[in-house]
Length: 168
Image (cartoon, rainbow, N blue to C red; front, side, top):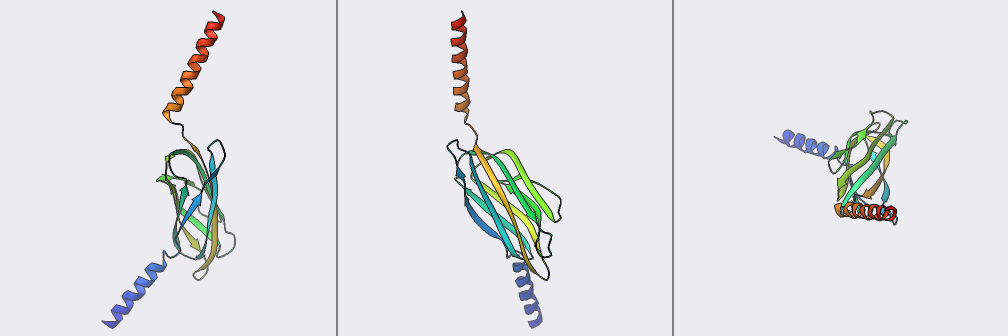
């Protein structure tokens, strides 16, 4: 009975360590007067384990056209990261095959806020140790509301009416 208790405790300790290198990071998007926002982000993993990293981007209201990228280079033993998947609000990023140079991207994807990037992967190392990192960028621009398009069409209609009136 005592041996099974020790085995259970060891199994629980190992299973908890398998996902011990997870992180959640809040990232502020900086922008310009046109409403385009951007930021860079990254994580360093110091254990050779599977990970789930979550990035919460603010401001988060509204709908956005999203461009994003991930990159990692790991030529040295103990510095490699393999991405399993990455998604922003359930919209999957395109990922390169696993290897020493990996990257992922998303181009001009319309996504409603709040924006949350979730990266699933593994940090590989020798004898459980690692010092592997990845970084990324995100660029977002607001999706115009339908009233904006209505004003655009109305303005073009007025210009067409004025042009026709001028030449009549």
